[in-house]
Length: 181
Image 1: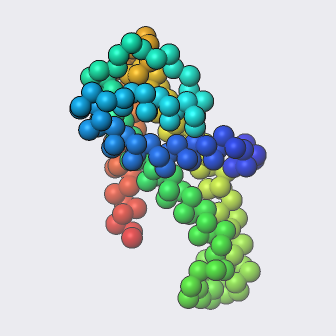
Image 2: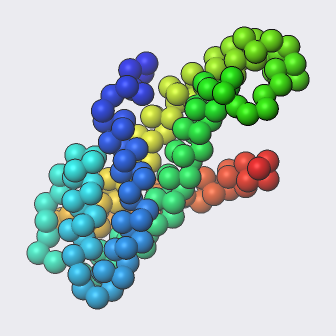
């Protein structure tokens, strides 16, 4: 668990989360015109997540369905992961914040105390938690790729249901965070 933020697989997952949304958006019109949307999405999952999926003879409408159904999950995965990594950076780099008055901050009145509270209370725990959250998102995304774009095409509802529920749950959880901004 302690080494997870330092593993290359964690950073490949982050790269996938950063690219999945724009690639998914681009694949919608590509799939509409009968282009290689399924091959593009399988290739991204294979290169960054190590997901091996047998290439079907044709993906047809399932490539479009995958691109559309994965969009909410891709958006929420990007937003949640981006937020969590921002929390890590802001708390670990607390002394570098502009206009930071440690006398009014948690752990103040000294900068060392404020940094200790923010770094140990917000930076380190989120640094250890965020890779596992990303792992969960990419597991759902890999399941969607295997179900919609694989050769067997089984479990479409079992893959899309949890993905959409997680996306909706994350959207609901983001409302209070947005109101704090």
